[in-house]
Amino acid sequence: MTPAVEARRVLVAGRVQGVGFRWSAVAEGERLGLAGWARNLPDGRVEVHAQGDPRAVAQMVEWLRQGPPRAEVARLDAQSVEPDPGLSGFGIRW
Image 1 (cartoon, rainbow, N blue to C red):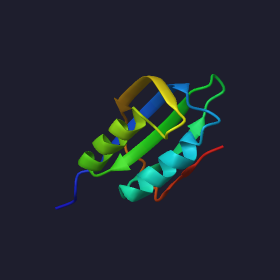
Image 2 (cartoon, rainbow, N blue to C red):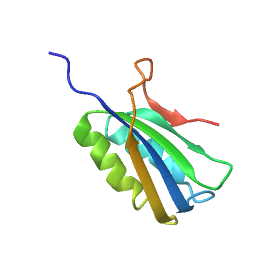
Image 3 (cartoon, rainbow, N blue to C red):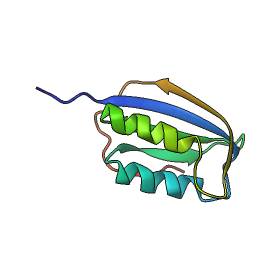
Image 4 (cartoon, one colour):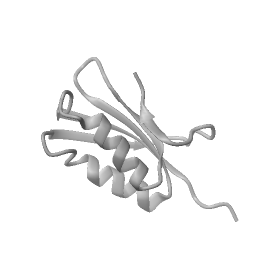
């Protein structure tokens, strides 16, 4: 039986650029054993794609609600998306 894989696209708004948000998200994604990426958007938000075990994805979304110590998350929008079958590891997209 193939384990369940869930994927979420998360948009995080607030003071989330210039505070190490992406690097911290990568570290958290790796800690949780997820595949995915984080990137800055031109409008000041950070976009995160996280996929893997549904419980770990839920933990990642909860972590993103706070972010690293210097971040101030004002809004978080998460939606389910199709998993990317070719994705492995967690990194930063430019």
